[in-house]
Image: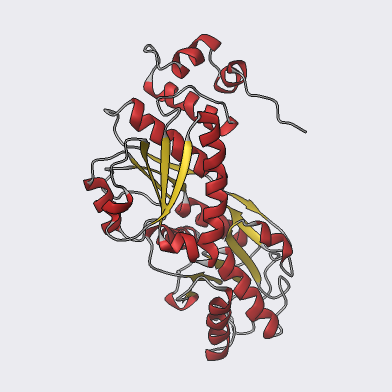
Length: 340
């Protein structure tokens, strides 16, 4: 069924304002408070309203890091973000060009008179972000943020999402929750911090021995890491929170090979919410990142920079929902749970 076209009346009803106010915002006319203006524009982006814009007829250039293009987890993340970006570009009357980042970054963000600006997806380091900021061109970060707030950005609220995932496991009675991660990027570190935050709020010490690090996003690497953890010492955890779906899939593989029932003995929770979660055995519970919405909002942030170059950069973080499937359930008592 074809989706009904979104009207100004729909935006007005969603935001609790008059149609005249919506009209003023969409036409970039004065007389609307900045916070209300942003709320109406964000609602337009979420609902897919085709806003008239200074970027209509122009080109946005998506520059994706090597990691975003080739890593198992990040490449699928990129695909869904790109889908949202393409839909929004079509609604705004823009074209979208994709480039894989190479060094120097300036060559990827070279001045292009047809380009409204650039979207930098999953930059690999703060040095890359600083280099992009120094170029003095319209740039929006996706799946990252600028620690110095020189560039606008849109990303999942990683720390809060991980805390909520940990809380779900705590509600199931889990007290020994292993965190499976691939360290390196600040956004992933925030997931570890969210796990630790929620445990400490519950009076539980986030023990270093319950953090298992993997050197690759591939499920086989995660499976090997979990297998090592199981063979080095008796199992002392009842749940695994993984920093990515691909790591969670590896955990499922390792537990199955060890004859450990999921979720009867160990619950497993992923982080991404990719469609493949439904295909796992058992189906994988996961934090679901609104990837398409992230892509859509990136272009609206770019439009803000173009139409209001004097506005300060802003950081947009989106809430993530948790989808429970068959891989999570009530806690069992681990055979080697520490006394007390």
